Length: 486
Image (cartoon, rainbow, N blue to C red; front, side):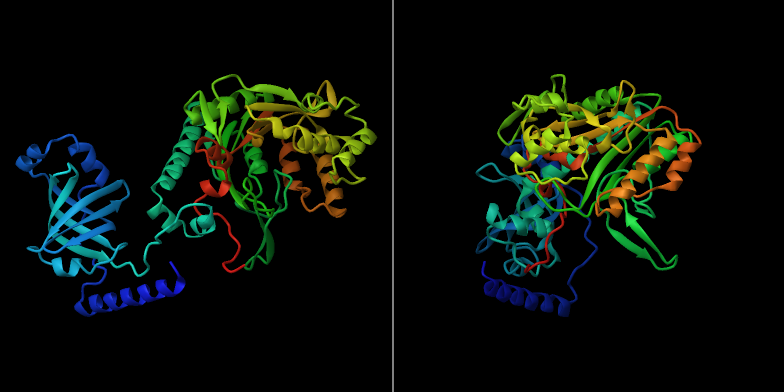
């Protein structure tokens, strides 16, 4: 619909609202709905026309008018509520019939009457009373489907939900997934907590934070990039199984799998290790999926089979690269061949991870735990006893997307302090994603943290997988967008 036409319709509707205000009938709030469309269909769709004529079940419904057919002395319309749609039948004998004929699509109506079935067998409310509850000043778009309108759908989610009923099912599924994750952890004795979203020192991940300022305290604060360091403080304090479903904020680019704010599940368990976390991560994903296999973007993903476990070096070698994967010169040569930018300050661990991301990550379609991460790129993870250059860490990939990350936690305060210092040196050298030195967290570790394992699972990416959604924006109700007009 052209903007000029839309403006004309809006003006016409404003005139109608003006008349309603003059009559004292604009936006009433004394109508009480008793029945939902979905409930009525569930209860009465199976009854034949004659049975409904005998019973005349009461129906008091309300919703947005999506369709309307005016036929002189009688008219049909379709109302949509949160559970579905129901047809209404309005005759000229009732009060407000003449007014009804001038109401617009998108208006919200309240209807009282009884149920019957039309000659075509459609369940319908025969209206005895009908009221306009809310005037819609803007018309619903005639076409709101397809890639050409994708940005509008994200930007005006309220319209998207009205005209594309399948969208709501994605967010119903999202709610169900979060509830299942919560129930699995609570059943295993984990306590759900809430930790600060504004932090004096951002930590728990390698990421660039958002910065703000608290006026009363005259201090800078950061939106959290992860709750990890606060959750592990709680383990120190004796909450030995703890989790949080949390909103994180990272000042990074936007893509089909990245949004500046996103939802993570993080959980920590004392006296366990990274292998336990892999097992629990697998159980959580399988429970959330509720199925042994699913189709994502045309690919069948096997959730019911045991998840594969593969080291970073083996994943790289499977792509035909056979050199020494701890030789910095060899790794640099391979990355240069692949046109992957890297600096002289990167150790072999960073370069090896870059090579994995460049050649192997895209092949991780079926659920696969990637292991043997270099300690250099794992500043909060425990070093492996048999090889201190590695960390006891994993990442779960499905359809080439990182879904989860976990490890045996570093509980040596002196080792942690040195790793923080190394991160601080990187930050001073210009790495904006490097971590800050967190003296209070080191002090917490100095009080003694038991052997602990933890993990984080990306809720948005998991919901993408389980709803066959190609973009993270499809599973976030209000994704971040550029300002309208560029």
